[in-house]
Image 1 (cartoon, rainbow, N blue to C red):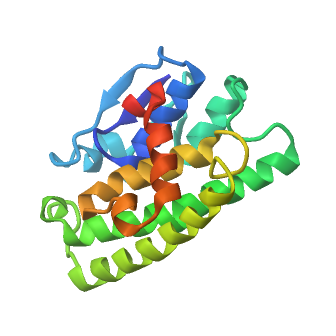
Image 2 (tube, one colour; image 1 turned 30 degrees about the vertical axis):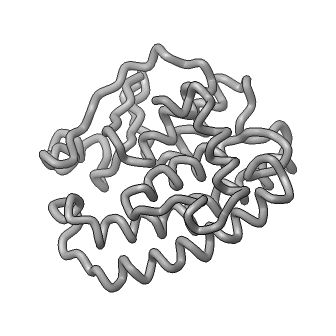
Length: 205
């Protein structure tokens, strides 16, 4: 297998953290330089038609894109430690938590950063700063909800660390580009959770 990834982007980092939590260190990595537009080359589009990273090329030549799909494949190959649920019921609740972190937290953060950060201008044309600032307000609303959740339970999906924590952590870390820090917003539980996740070896990928 071969994993196409890129530095500093949250979705590739989600896969790398997932692999690290699994103790998988033998999948070769190929860096895709987004600033050099390598993701838009004909060669890469042949593997990832929508020009998205990460992408996992399997040994038979097929390519999986979409972070969640890649993690599902890896979980199937390496069931332990379990990160996505041990039965259908737990899987459903973990997926719900993961989707909330992905669509309501990470997606809003990404939209804010893409449309307000000058360093992202070459990748996001045209930028719409008003839209980006509106997304920042939504980020704070959703982060407040996650703060309430984490005041009641230790992890995003409940009583144990799961893929939902990986997604939420990568989102919060990416939010540094919009100068967002949970403690500065009064989100003590979210900050304490973030700091606990940051102590895990997988957070250093």
